[in-house]
Image (cartoon, rainbow, N blue to C red; front, side, top):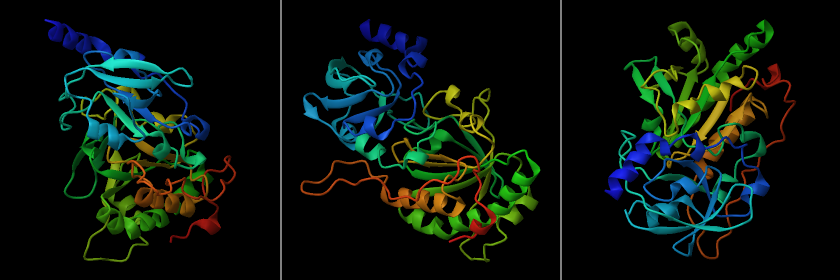
Length: 343
């Protein structure tokens, strides 16, 4: 009877916004204190209602934890009591919370989802300050991409889970001059992504070039104008087809976290996301803050070197932040003409 009542509680909204309140992107001083960051709370039979997005887990059954991989190894879905030592968001008081959770199968195609999606605070802290925009530290937002190249088809956010991804979402600014400059940048950025696509793929990182408007053949040809012909093919180009009213716009987070929301709070400019294998947004930049070439280069380097979220081996130095150039004038999100070149 208890289990049926608990599951009914889940169905009636334990995954609601009260478990995942809006939080500002975590800064260095917030993550440097350690533990494991709670990126998203799906809810569970017992105890998850006492945990919020942005809390940090310090220990599980009195065993200190510093990475999401450790939590995966311990396992939270035992359907038995587990004690979590938790520090609430931006507080210093430590609380012991007992949870009971079973695997979640209501996020297809993800099987056996945990109640909490987490990432080590130290791992999350590797992103540069300018790559900690709105979705930084979130689980995969609700999204839907349409592949404009053959074979055509749709991809939703949950299908990204289990593999890392670099996603460039291209939005054009409304002003004519800025639009022209943005349009001129497309081929060099696409060529840069194409150049490293195989290296990323070998490392388990997929690459997505996405446009916010119809990806017609003329635009696709323009994007590939700097890419030499190759037997290995070219990166497919996707069209952003997310719609919060579409039941196929899916992610780990709810529809309120639609990826389009990441585009709304800034002047129209490209967005760069890097998502790790465990479904956490580890890098979110808008508007090429260090110039088009350097922003993409840093994102690719980050995807290749900084996504690991595992305990630091004994005697090894912790992996610190990726070294990055200083940001350029934030009032001018697009690189000037002399920085349009690819790698």
